[in-house]
Amino acid sequence: MGAEDSQIITDPVHARLPRRENYQRLKNEMLQPGDTLVICSLSTLGSKYAARPELIHYRDHHIRVKVLDMPATLQDFPEGLGDIYDTVTDIIIQTLNTVIGQEKIRIKRQQRRGIEALKESTAWEDYGRPSITLPDNYIEVMDRWLTGNITANAAMGLMGLRRTTFYKLAKLYKEGELIL
Picture 1 (cartoon, rainbow, N blue to C red):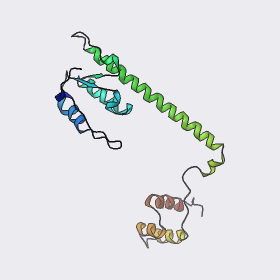
Picture 2 (picture 1 turned 135 degrees about the vertical axis):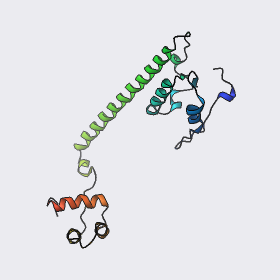
Picture 3 (picture 1 turned 90 degrees about the horizontal axis):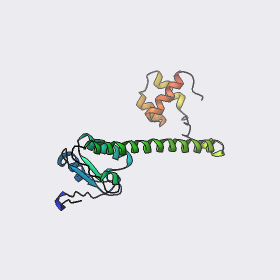
Picture 4 (picture 1 turned 30 degrees about the vertical axis):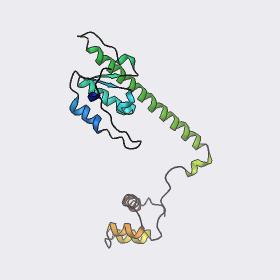
């Protein structure tokens, strides 16, 4: 594409921790309005979820993005028709929005089908978070806590309950809704 070696920015990418320091420096410090960024693929900008805000950033900062595997982005237009570049970028962004929206709908549909299938099987009985088993000393410790003889932290420690579980059970106990 006519770039010199000094104009090519690369980043080492690790499977779990992509280090994008050079890319961030390119994006935030080096590229100026009117510049052109050439990338091999849209995935260079990240997943479809990450690529969308990146494209919006470049469009808003008047930086043209050419994607080598997207021929529509490689077209050169006569001077004065720069708005066409923004239009092409907007079309790509809208396409990503559509793809992301359709994917969310597809995932929800698959989840719903999976749950419906699970409801019809015997595995449904074991589905979800296991119910809380009350400690043997629950009533004794709760009565001591409610009368102010021990602190909530001490009560949690004596019963082996975490904070959220303790207060959830305490509320039910106070309201008389806890089944012992």
